[in-house]
Each structure stands twice: as structure tokens, then as C-alpha cells.
Amino acid sequence: MAKKNIRFYFSLWTVKIMRLSMKALGKNAAHLPGKFAIKLCPNFIELMDKPKHTIGVTGTNGKTTVSNLLVDMLEACGHKTTNNRLGSNMREGVASALIANSTITGKSKNDWAVLEIDERSSMHIYPYLKPEYVICTNLFRDSILRNGSPEYIQKIVSDNMQKETKLILNADDLISGSVAPENPRIYYSIRRLPSDTDKCENLVNDCQICPKCATKLEYEYVRYHQIGKAYCPKCGFSSPKPDYDAEVNFDKNTMVIYEKNAKEEYELLNNSIFNIYNQLTITALLREVGISADKIRESLKKISLPDYRYTKFRVGNIDVVDMMAKEHNPIACSVVFDYVSKEPGRKEVLFLLDDETPKESMCWIYDCDYEKLNSDLIKHIIIPGSRSLDQKLRLLMAGVPEEKIIIDMQDMEAPDYLELKDTDTIFVLHQHWKPEVDKKVVAKIKDLLNKHFGEEA
Image (cartoon, rainbow, N blue to C red; front, side):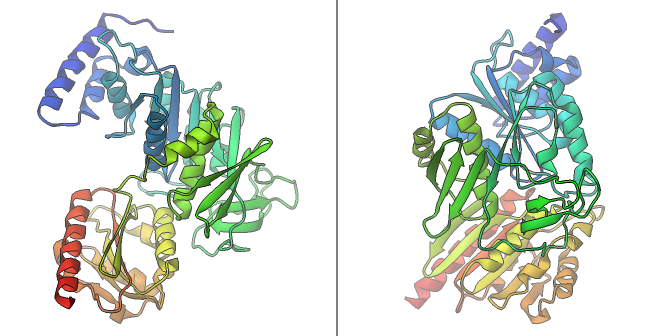
């Protein structure tokens, strides 16, 4: 193991001064200190002392939510954490988090670290960080310009995983569930749901053939895309048996988890399938590190989902649901579209999914299930921005009637096109990179609703 040297200490002290200066200027210092530390000392992360327990969180969808919920849960249980929840999930962000929670000699101030890690950054982080646990939420088709196929990302993560690291994996996803096959692991799963189907109804399923013998897989049930329970009729390859097996009751808003020789019931934080998986993931991890079910239940009452991912409020008799739909990620968007379509009542849908730069490819929308939005309960789909014609074309291809699609306006003008009469819910679907626009649009919707119901009264 490399030893700390003058170069390391010079880097550490320099970036600590930089961080203090940035904080004094109101910056969150989540990326730049780490960037400079690595530039000054390339093996900086390796030389920093690590917390006693380090948890890495990676995967295509859910890693930010899982990381943040896990930090909240650990802190609700009385543990202080080193984390990168304020910014970058690249190596610079990990380095910045370690800097922020260390002494002037590089020793960790906390016993726990929860670090979100970008899948492609694995090669720059895992060899030097050596986490005790790594959660891999799932691996899906993502931005084609960055990630290509999920198998490509699976190989990057597997090739760079430390052999001692214990993996927390989704048994319902054969791609992420096969990461680093030599590593110790535990699996979690959700039992069959009423909404599951006998075959894939999505445009994309990236796990259709057996990874062992290339025979076409059979699915006992499909939840969405490749998520479900599969087996190979030829060689016997199948979805792994879960260590934490969840049974969801939507009527009671609960989840019963069967583990070892016990079963434990927990109240759901949210009824979307992504967030049920997120909650199951953190529960499995917390049980593995020895936190009791009672303590988990108690801590769940103190936390909530990150409000930039999902918020809901009511004005008069209309609900407003603001959800992140994560542009360039066809699977995440498809799941959000499915959620919108299945929620009861008559709906207005407002897209804030604009790609402003011409170089950005719109090919992802043709992998995304816009067909889910072809619903009689959806009254209008309002699409501001420079790429609204692309979105309109895709909706027309999905069978959505043209008279329901409203385009050609600026973001802040879009709420003016909402039809409030006979509307039960307004859905605002926003992208990852423009949270400030989303906040302003939602605030305007709230003002319009207050005015509308004030005038009605």
C-alpha cells in the first residue's frame, strides 16, 4: 500500500484552503477541490484514510435516490456519514467528499461513507476506494452517446470491482445481477405484482437470450423491460433466489420482506415501482450491516424521497405531481410514463424534457414507451422548447391524437395552456439538468391554481 508523502499533504492542504474559500463564496465545493487534488496527486483517493464502513452505490437508475435515502437512514440511526450527495459522482466528487470529511492529516472524521459512483468511473474509483459493500441497482440501456449497451457497462463495473467487496444486487435484473460473479453477494427481489405480464410489452428488453448458452429465455413474468423472473429452458440458468424477498400490498401501502427465518413489514415511502425497489435496496443493505428491522421502521418515519425527484401537492381539487423523467434515459422515462398512465383520474401532462443543444441526439425517444401516454384519461400533453417537434412526432407515432398535443411555447408560458376544468391531476415531467426551470414552472402552476379556485369561490 502506498504511503502518504509530501506531494499528498501539499495537495490536501491546498484543496482544503480552496474548499474553505469556495464555501465562503457560497459554493458547495462538490467537484473542484477533488479535481485539483487528483491533478496535484494522481493517487490521492488511495492515500486518503477511509471511513471504517464504505458503501458504493452504482447503477443506471436509482443510484442518487438510493444514496440519499441511505445517508438519511444512517443518520436517522445516529451515524454520521461521508457522502457526495451535493454533487459529482465521478472520482472528483468522491475525492471532494473525502476532503470535506477529513482532518488536516487526511484521517476520516466519520465511521461511515455512502458514495454514489458513476458506472463508467468505476475504473478510477474502486481500485483505490475498496468499498466494503457496493449496491448495483440495475443496468439498463442509457444515453447511447456515453454508455452504449448495458453489457458494456456491466463489464466495466465487473472488471474494476475489488474481490473483497460484497455486492447488494437486484435478483429481478439478470444484467446487473450478474456483475462480478466471483464476489460475495446478496440478492433482493419483489414478488409478482398484479400489473406484471407474461411477456415484455415495452419496446426494449436487453436480456432476451441466455448469457450461458444463448438460448431464448422464458419469463415467468415481466415487470418492465428486462425486469422480471426468467429462466433458460435448455441449460437451467435462471434468476437467482433472493435473500430479501418482498411482497407488496398497495392497498395497505406496505411491503413485507421475507429474510432468512423472519418476515418484516415496512410502510412504503412511495407507490411507484422504482421507489419500491429503492426502498427495498436500502432495507437489504441496512439489514446486512446489522441494523434492526425496528430501527429501520422508526427511521423510515423520519425521512422522505428527495423532493427534486418527486413532489406532490394539492390546490383546490387538483393534485400537482412533479416528477423527474431523466431525459436520454429511455427506461426511466418509460417507467414514469407508465406511472402517469396508470394513476386514476383525468390528467394534464406538461413536458420539461427539452434538449437545447443541437448536438444532443434525440434517438432515445424511439427506445422510450411513448405509447403509454396514449390514454383516454390524458387530456393534453403540453411541450415547450426547441425540440418540441421531435416530441410531437414521437407522440403521433405512438398514436396520441394530434389535437391533444400542444407545442411551440417557452417553458414559463407552458402552464398557461393547462386546462383546469374537469382535471384531477397535473403531471409535470422534468429533466435532470434544469431544476431551476422546473421550480419556476411548478410555482407558476400553483399560482394559477390558487387564482382559479379563488375566483371559483
